[in-house]
Image (cartoon, rainbow, N blue to C red):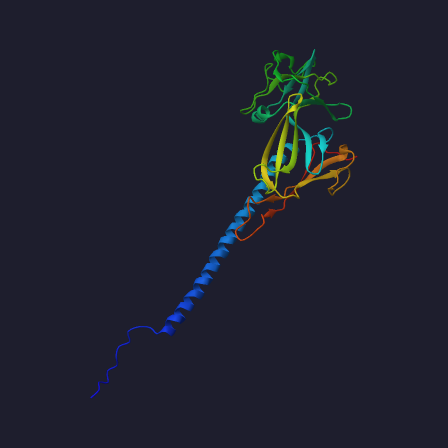
Length: 303
């Protein structure tokens, strides 16, 4: 007589195992795809942030200098990829003229900016036209402390800037200065003046990231000698479309072409299209962030 009890099942059939493996494969493929997608997205966002950082840093650096450039005589040279400007380092008043130099009283300013600057020349305000007249330095010229600060006494014979007991005014953690600068014999005593440095900004091939874009180069002249330029790549990389565009007399829109007379230029559009340092994951091209901002010269006037 046979027993009616069934033999216990000891495993899975081949069909069941195959179905389970297929299901697990589908789930794993979906998870891998999701993880790759998330990694690519994160990499893409990081690349975009890097590109934006390039644009923003360049904007901050350029605006610090360009917003102080005078509307007449402040721009020396202009091309689509480069400009040369005379940037004020310190402002003051003319106190007295002496043989070979002029004594001036400088207002308290950014001591770090002044210390890091390179003496390129002086400029004084023409009292008739209101336009600053620029006088470049020669080899050997330097700014020195005036040995007789009483020359700037807030008097008719030697005006200073709010001097106290014949000494430079003391600001909050900053001190004014009575100094000898390049001779300005035509400058009326008491007229406004400033000390400037000449800076060349140019978009050129990047040394920091070769073959991956252009860099923004900053070149400052040495004292009175054309062969003492110091050139530094301050930020990179930029797209090949990064450039300067020009606002001229009585125009609301900037133009790409450099005008024949740069004296008609009243400001720039800074096209600061930054690049990421490298392509994002899953991509073959560097990310580009398009940034354009305008800056106009100080004391801007139209014809």
